[in-house]
Amino acid sequence: MMRKIFRFLFKLCLWFVAISVLSVLLFRFVPVPCTPLMVIRAFEQKANGNEMHSSHDWVSIDEISVNMQKAVIASEDDTFLDHNGFNFEAMQKAYESNKKGKKLKGGSTISQQTAKNVFLWQGRSYFRKGLEAYFTMLIELLWSKERIMEVYLNSIEMGDGVYGVQAAAQHWYGKDAKNLTAYEAAGIAAILPNPLKYRATNSSAYINRRKAKIVRLMRYVQLDYNANEKKK
Image 1: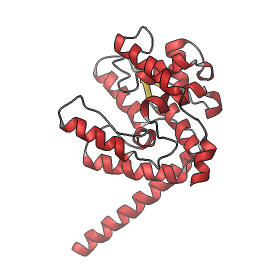
Image 2: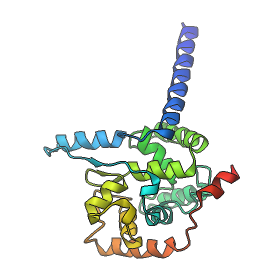
Image 3: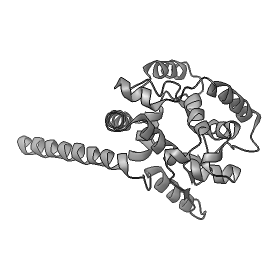
Image 4: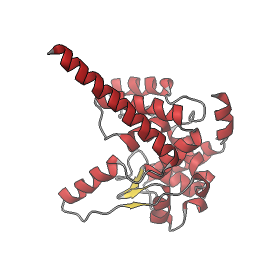
């Protein structure tokens, strides 16, 4: 009996690895049509008695303002172009801050956030975190940094029912993603920690301070995807 159980679990693991690798390879070339969070939010809207609504328009990295790319690096992951998926220093700082009972902070990189948003559900269990690390390693291995950024900016939540930078640019500023200014891009990046609570326009004083800080940090971001690929 134990041998049969072990054989079943072994085959299950093999199938999981095969399907996950194939999925990551597929999305290396194909736009991500939907994410688990989009589905979860739709059910939440329905459960709350609201009409289900969602805006998501995929655009290539060439159609996304460089300002937007720099803004998320400045605000979310300043070592994105240098690390291999994880920023252990940031994770340690987040752990120490949370242990002291301060406001809960995350140490997730853009790569980790992409893995979570595209392949997994929301949550803080060790099991989900383990899967997040696994998928992060896969996309770092099989995708370029430019592709990770492209998928990230097309998949993350940027407002109520708003997913991806093209939908966000239209929602918040009435323009295409390729035309975002530095301050507008900073406005979207500033609300990413909680896009259901904060607004990119008519923002609170806290968000306005974040915008100003992000714009300052953007000046120091050197966006060179090719340089990173040469290091691999």
